[in-house]
Length: 107
Image (tube, rainbow, N blue to C red; front, side, top):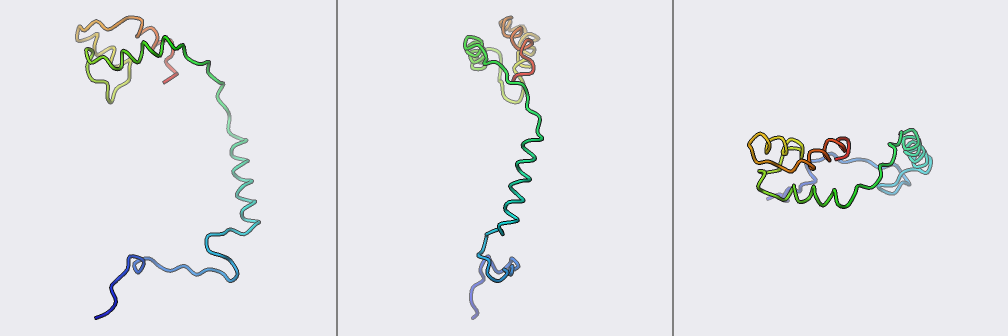
């Protein structure tokens, strides 16, 4: 009987150059890669910082999310959930919709 097969037998072997420890980059290649990453970060436009949301507003939205009276909340946005509850005659709170429309770009 032969030796049992190992999982590494199904992958091709890579040859390493002389004098290079495994998994290490040459100093020049490492510096070049680092410079490319810095260039990418520098070229990236930054979005203007948004002011922190009002804690009372976050609490109101959290209560709306956790209230099962308005149906399940998985797979849809808060506004879609509010509109679905309104269409079903469940009378969701109006300030929730106003807040969602006011902060439409802030998830």
